[in-house]
Amino acid sequence: MIVKLRFIPLKVHLNHALIPRLQKNHPKIAIIEADTRKKMSGHKGEVNTDFHLQFFDDKNHLIFQGLRLPHPYHYFQIDTIILSTKFILLIETKNHPGSIKLDENQFSQITEHGEKGYTNPLLQVQRHKEQLQDWLDVHHFSKVPIITLVVLSNSSAIIQTNDPRIHRKICKIDKLKTQIIKLTSPYTEERMTNKELKKVSKYLLKEDTPLFPTVSNSYRILPSDLQKGIICPSCLSLAMVRKNKVWLCPHCLFHAKNAHQNALLDYFLLIKSSITNKEFRDFLGISSTKTASNLLSTLKLPAAGTNKGRIYYCPNDFISQLEHRYQLEKQKTKA
Ligand SMILES: [Zn+2]
Image (spheres, helix red, strand yellow):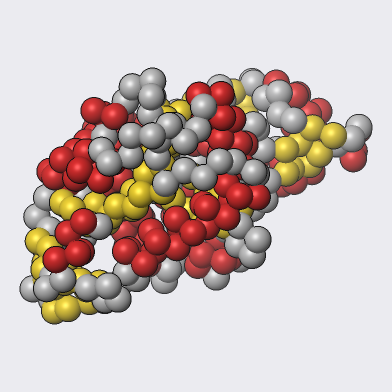
């Protein structure tokens, strides 16, 4: 049973909101686009792993497609967790193409451009295992065997190793099912009750804390470098104006009723997670306080304070709204 669905990396949403708000010749655009491609390639690999895990999708196995959990000094992020009453399986996905050379310590990719080293996913998943064990101990859950596996999701990847033990810890995507059955079948003893399993699942969902990247930390771009306004969905110019209760583009005459919603999603992604009436007017280019107030109240955002001191917060379903917007834009570019 899938308990937590995977979503598009938040960095990709950030980048998609960021690029149209930079000057066309901004020097960071190439870096941002390369970063988006890298993130989407990793995501594609994880989705491929999800697809090959469908055989596990029954009521005895709880699947979490990506979690970020607290640990005393930092958070740790696991690509896939599968919970059962007999074991916990952690899967780390790598989507590198080409030859993958590895031993206990080294992990490198060999392509026509040469050899490139990466963080060793075998060590990474081992560290996640220790961190998850600490997390389970903190919450006083029963000891359950934690099994780890690294999967190479790119079908063109070739594993190169002289260490036969490595093949127990890493496999190619087409061998994922066989490998999981081999690794998990020795664990036949029930270590948790179904009730406890549900409790662990509830705690994992409660403590999952997605990381919202910022423009300044990611690319050293200041919020003041961003162009304000509402982007025209048709010609992409940043000039929509409010006329007769609709947003009108003076360049292509496209009009839209709810164009402010997209601009507000951009604001929460690119600037900060709360907004006042004044900040809303400033970012969207609205002159009337009353119009801004009406628009904000129809969005039913969580809010605190009254009158001029009222602060509106990022919606609770922010990530779902971003996903929805991403899918719509993707459909539009396909059409
Ligand atoms: Zn337009």
